[in-house]
Figure 1 (tube, rainbow, N blue to C red):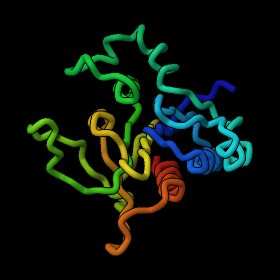
Figure 2 (cartoon, helix red, strand yellow; figure 1 turned 180 degrees about the vertical axis):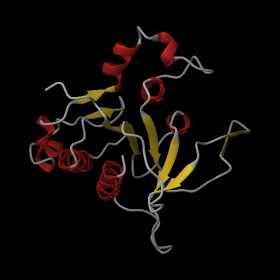
Figure 3 (spheres, rainbow, N blue to C red; figure 1 turned 90 degrees about the vertical axis):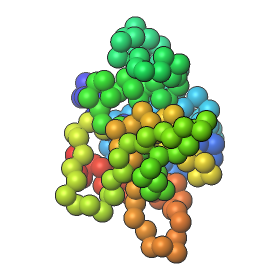
Figure 4 (spheres, helix red, strand yellow; figure 1 turned 90 degrees about the horizontal axis):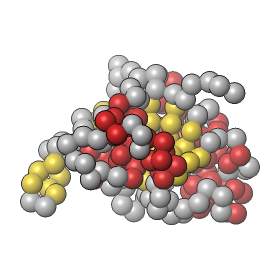
Length: 192
């Protein structure tokens, strides 16, 4: 099977094995080509993850960041930028962007001004709402999901092209991670 990898899911620090399995099952339903796990994410092969995935864990290539880092270490120019100390998932996203893959950070907040990091403001990628029907995503994309408690790490968000958000009623602050992942994968697949 030598089809191009166009739809990638990246997972940043998810520790719940049931959520991992549900996300993998959903990824299989939307024909996701590969899943990248940060080194501190739980193992996709935990028994609970395999059970919640309904066995689909065997249908999608799932790699740890360290596996990708070994591959991109030979391509130093593409993986380097202003910060030579970028590593882990952030470095993999930088490399994917250099390969014309649109990297999208799924966020809950809509902070337009950025966040303060060591007393200096950090510029965040632009925010796009999934409900904006006029927005079309690139044919090759990587959607980054963070854990339910902390979201995506700042250094990972900064390496993305855009932040994406699911608009919800004001009385609801967030969705469960597997539900949000399903909405994101469906929308991105239908608009790329």
